[in-house]
Length: 332
Image 1 (cartoon, rainbow, N blue to C red):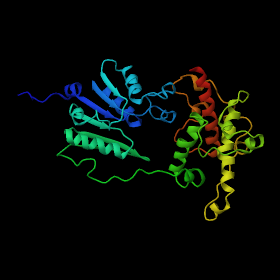
Image 2 (image 1 turned 60 degrees about the vertical axis):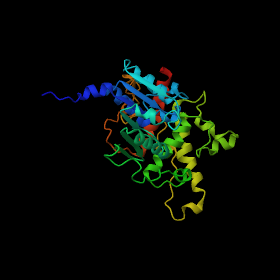
Image 3 (image 1 turned 30 degrees about the horizontal axis):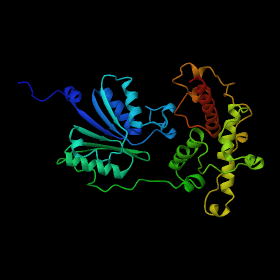
């Protein structure tokens, strides 16, 4: 006797899915849903795309900065799945239009949010509408996914959630003590200065010795001058953030009475005058054989991605990655 239950592929085709959040998790979710056969997907996200999103939210590009995340994500997925229905809402999930009746029309809700308040709100709507909720999120290096079905599992709020971990800017810039401090520094401070609004202040906005002598603002450190080649620009940034900024931190003797003092690093002390491979000059052609696999490591002849790089190798990778970035940007 044939089963009356619908085949899983048929259930996927007719399912109506609500995604809340179109950021780092949301981009992955939307891509996976589309490629898995779901044909009716709705997305709610109130945010617009920022430069700092581009390193992990792969559906977005530089040209999308300032646009709605939900709408751009929809357009990006429709390019490779043009025959499915994706409806974006550039709105706050807490807006009155997204009430219990709105939630009742969906077979499942997927959360990709970045704050507890919105997560709790969606959880309560799903309970009221009797719709399963798949909750996902990240904290630091950790990720988690939980499924909440009314009457069968505990709800999202049945267990207290710890407050999100934040790192004071003063700690990550002046006295970092954990690996995660360095990652947050690179993402929130250095990445923003290199690829975001260079006029926006953050803790890298200290005056360098060169800037002080010429009465220029420190923003000039992060702006490449017309007469400045790429390596000069890279070394200038290197010297500023790893040399001068460290010397500035060391000037406060009280801070280091009971701490290990960091050592300022300048490019001239780590690298020779000419950036070169161990066996000669950089092979600038090999990095561009495939424009989608540009690699500073490959162009420097460093074959094993599992190697632990020395200070010199890390420094060379930084300068070469910057060179590849500017070279490739001219091609776009």
